[in-house]
Amino acid sequence: MSKVFRVGDGKIWHYRFRLAGVRIQRSTREKDKGRAEIVAQRAYDDAVIRANGGHPMPTLCELAEEWIKVRGPVVSASHVRGMEMFVRHHMYDLGAFPISELTTERVELARNEHMKTRSPATANHWLRILALLVNWAVRREILKKLPWKIAMLRVQKRPRTTLPIEMVKDWFEALDEAAGKMSAVGTAVRLMFGLGLRESEASGARWEWIDWERRTYTPGVTKGREATAIPMPGWIAERLGATRSATGLIVARRNGRQLPAGYPRHAIRAANAACGIEGITSHRLRGTFATLLSEEGTPIQTIQAIMRHKDAKTTMAYLEINHDRAAQAQDRISDRIGFNL
Image (tube, rainbow, N blue to C red; front, side):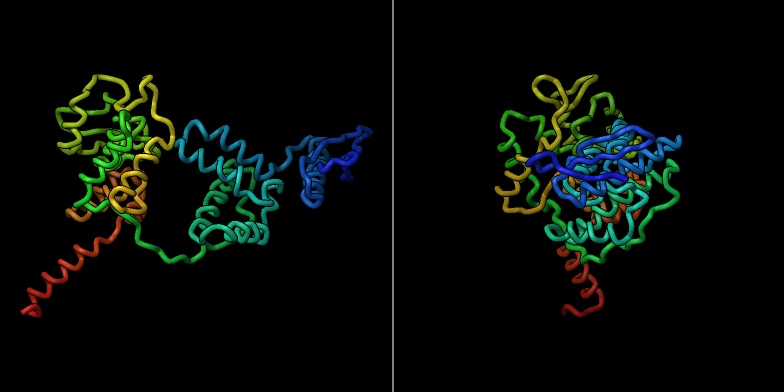
């Protein structure tokens, strides 16, 4: 068995045990005795398994590190950042547990801890990340199935902001003013609004992916690795035509490198403040793109293809209700009935 102890007046707990005549002593890196005992017991159990020629069950923290190492190069940058954020801030007490010991009770307690400072909607997102990670272990046959059974919380869906069409020009003028000499930011944000590109897709957009004759743009590197041609509106083609090139990045830093993660955040916030709008983000520009197409009568299957979604339900989640248009439609129906005399 493993014993935990502290050295002198130190706050860090250590563990020590003897196995097959060999003494093993390590730091748990924990200041809490309870968590230190978990780490110590895990170290002892792993040592026994290895001594018998087996492979120990990874902890959640170890699994996450392996996921980032293996999956990081083939998923989107935002996906990796989300997992890194989960590892740094949102594992709570689960990180030290072997994934086979992530019981329903333990996961529920961790979710409760998450909701002390965050909304139920983010708790559902937290559970999705956890499930994605452990399901990856299931697919690799490390586990037979998820060791917990927890339903998503029921949350009230709130209307999300879309950029009002009558404010688009003023908003972009404010954006360009905030971006200053970084005209690449203004162009990238227009690609999000006009083509429905994700933030990372806009920063990685390339000239060779434009078909000028057909006036289409086909993202070459996307989140789901889909290659779908997107019709390019005339105003986008006109803006890009001023700096047209045969190859290379459409938008870039002054040194020619790709724009960094989060590059439009400051300019978008400034444009929101100048126009008195709340909630417009890179992602909501993509939602605005989908919503405007829907309002103009574009079939959901077409929007799904252009948005590069595998499931139409995902596309539907991007669409917001335009209450003004709904009210106008109601008035037209009333006129036809004869109620508005």
